[in-house]
Length: 474
Image 1: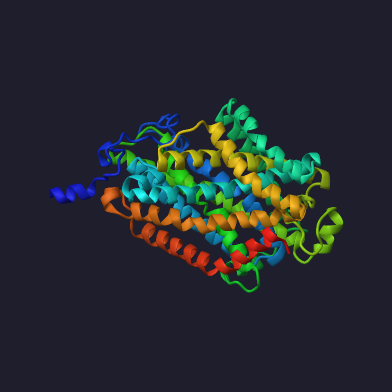
Image 2 (image 1 turned 90 degrees about the vertical axis):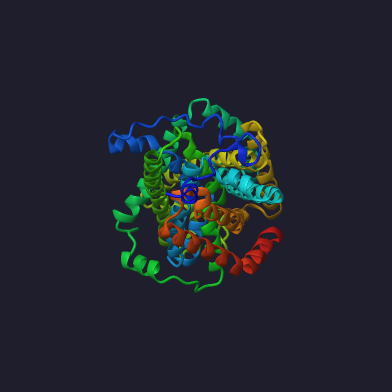
């Protein structure tokens, strides 16, 4: 092998301080390399247990209130017409998260660090600000979801519930003190509970079992046949392929002990790919179930919804506030409201944790700034609460779902700024050596990236019009 070939086979993006004359910072310093991995001769399941985790933590963001809001609105207003978007977005999310994990495992850098080290200095500020905008938009969804949950559980007025969410940093610190594994276990149980309920409704209860041939037809006949579908499709994509998760995943995979030799790197890539496919497949099934049941219960039944849920607007019901009605075929209204409220609150709070970690990753990666997690959390939550208080205070409770969808549209608009650099790095043998994306990941990644970008540009005028409607009112 020639010297040139040897150089091309070796990644140069390892945390090498000689690249920019600075000592490289590690992603999530306190967690870096803290999880041991078994030897290669250990059994498959033992190895999978060791590597599993990062994708499931990331997948929490794929089941957050923003997803629930867009899925509910899609099913209630367009029946199964946008189910294909949920499926397509989930496939693209799996592809991009697999590539993100690959970057962290091979290069030893998260995406923010790679952008800082290998792009011009002037690009750091705009890249960081775009990331922060996406994190604030995501946190806006968590604020609204948690507020709706508090309203369902304790009948607190929504405006006051939004204000109360500002203090969730105290709850976050208390729960983290009990251990991350304990918190993750609670979240998994709650999500699994509501997922089980939806499974029973779709596959067991005859009154809510959908026509699977109709579902198959909806998946195989994509298109935007009604006004408003494009903006909602962009929102679904923004709620599914989340830009800050691309930064976060490339950092979380580094919590396992460093994989130095070729065999260990390949093993880490293999098991993290399995972890990603499993975690995001579960997220897809739950999102699809929410859309299908919303279509079953709400499509063409606005008057019924209003009669069952006081305060709903018959002309434009706030679907996230009446979503618990999707569980009433299985449970009575009170139990459905409590279960949905608890699951929604858990979804919002667990997504809060991943959002805080993502904020830490992008701030440290792009700017080399470090602040305490509670301060980071308080700043992000304050920036998210301000627009929620202003719009709900001026327009009332009926704007919750509109704000949720708008926050996800903002996320979708930011996606290209994360996807293009990720693909640029991972497709290059200069930075990834022999672990650069193969032909399938390269093709699938760029097709996903270009499709999302084209959809975002195509829908930008309608998205801007919708954004102004949400801000200014009807």
